[in-house]
Length: 425
Ligand code: LLP
Image: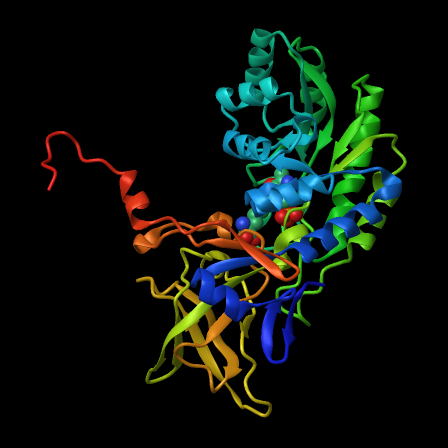
């Protein structure tokens, strides 16, 4: 469910026509919906209420300050994966005691920043990291509250580039070493073992991998407790998918997902954390873009739009599907034909859609929205081909605001410097 709907033939974000945003802000730009974000947060909170689960939004999905503020004001905590995200989350007003620090390669500086801030939990992913954290904590005279991220070796049946819970993935402590590492962790002076963390992948559309992984964690809890290791907390990660293609990828409901959690680990007397990213923000955003040219090639028709792979890289990187929605609905009865939707970047991979069935009337000047672009889109943008980062707009009812502006070319250039032996011109 989201709040991007056609009203009188014009695609709106809540009460705002996207045509109005395109005129004021220019294209391309991302547009997010407050009502959608709020709704998704409420749904997750409601289905997990009886389990008392702590929701730590995985801000890697969308780190915009206004999005973070909105979710943390609703009560969410934040899952961060770098010192940068930690600083940004704190700056957005997230209380440190609601922050979980995940990530496979945290530097000593980042670990120190997290301890100084007083985060709720640091998820340790390797023995060398455990030792590094122990040393940093002892130097600061504190004990680091940790969960150890285990790798349950479960196939999440998702795109190979976003699966994380297989033995061959770089994430977590391998299953066979988990008991030994937990036991060792309890002997370290700078470490306070709180529990187990896992995250098996993203855009997961089937509950079976979650059930398998949580079931394995349940067994591990029993073994660890028998070993005398305290397991007070379980951090179950994120991963629940969203629908990019209406009738095709149908994700399980948050309620069904919560039911799996309840059934597998609900009775272990552990404080639970979930780290959804995409499921909260994915369909709360669109990328708004204008068609520059319609180019009729020998074998195909191209719509060349002003957004490109640097703005939204998921199709190029994961062959991801994003629905292309004309902002002004074509007259009823308009035929469709297969077209390729491409950006201006000098790469063949700069293709948003191939052979997509679109209204024949679409052409230069028309606006289109790439749907389900709230997660892993603006955050993964770059400046390839000298293209400034895309602005982001937040809509709330009838109002909207640019929550990240487009940098000027002068600002982009100002980060660069010539060495002294080159002459300024
Ligand atoms: N927790 C941890 C430790 C994670 O690594 C991730 C995502 C999440 C939570 C949130 O997962 P979610 O609920 O969003 O599935 N760029 C890719 C997705 C990468 C996900 C990385 N980790 C994409 O565009 O599909």
